[in-house]
Length: 157
Image (cartoon, rainbow, N blue to C red; front, side):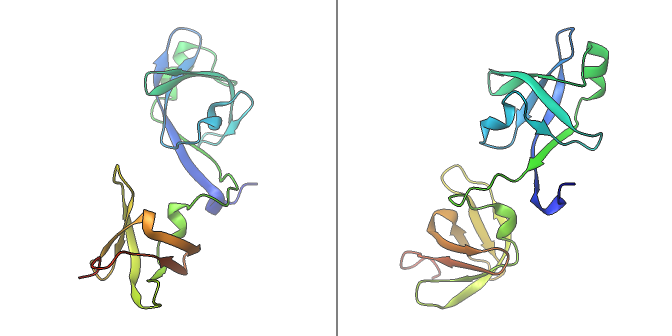
């Protein structure tokens, strides 16, 4: 059984495509290997296995093992797809940031992470102090405990 803390939402089934049970999937992850044949994805209705997938505009056309007709595909519209976290030491997982105390390079406490805002240049940590810190300044993360940053002068002024 998969631990829910290590399961992440990775996308959503948008709609049926064609007559043979294919669906359009919108990924909310940049880990495109989630669409590789044989990959198991989790849903509130049970697991689905990717049989085949192909990029289509900014989405994927996917054939899943359990969806074999247009009628079945229509019933899966809007269903959230999740998957176990991929172990990757080079990745900062957003859920590991919430509640962590933020310290700058001098060791000064700057606040606690209360939110993470999406931003095209770099996601931004929102601290309880009101400060905004681009994720690019993060140097070390101890999950939900401590975040260390190397911020430029003036960021907190």
